[in-house]
Length: 222
Ligand SMILES: Cc1cc2nc3c(=O)[nH]c(=O)nc-3n(C[C@H](O)[C@H](O)[C@H](O)COP(=O)(O)O)c2cc1C
View 1 (cartoon, rainbow, N blue to C red):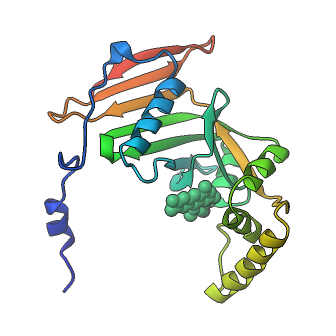
View 2: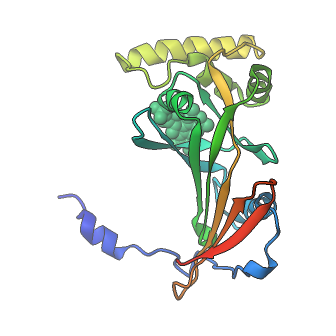
């Protein structure tokens, strides 16, 4: 028999002191702009050994308001927003077309940290998406060229054939266009920083965008 799920769940720990550090977060000393704190936390996560700090969960909702979530890569973060790329015709692409608003979540367990963002999402100009894609790996281009993301697949052989052709083209034509590949930016109107604390006095510091594009900072009960 396989391992019992519930037994295994009971045996697991969150923030094992052997592998996790829980740095204090002093809200009074936090910067005025969440981008600055995000950039600092991102660097600290990478430095602390978080292997893939640039993976994040992206939540969208369909035309009826029903939610969905999946993992995507962070392509950048600046005053224009947090960037990710995907196919416009994928499920998430269709969601964003119907409801251009989304949420992102990062979890960096090595420091007991979570960052949540919510805000409107806009597609960047096509040239920008293409430049972003062409600056990435041959594999990224091949995946973008394979296309049809989220459509039903008849068989793995069908994928193998399409992918083989896409890899071959990506190698031969590194500037190949991938028309449905789209760069999106989420411009947050809310960013929450969660710092875990050993006695469960977790700090939740939330930044809310003000009318004049400044930031209001609040604490939330954990
Ligand atoms: C670590 C990781 C990174 C991923 N990065 C991306 C990405 O940057 N863009 C993307 O379209 N899909 C990415 N995916 C695949 C998505 O999770 C998802 O399967 C795909 O985009 C289809 O989602 P959808 O049907 O909701 O549109 C990634 C998956 C994993 C596990």
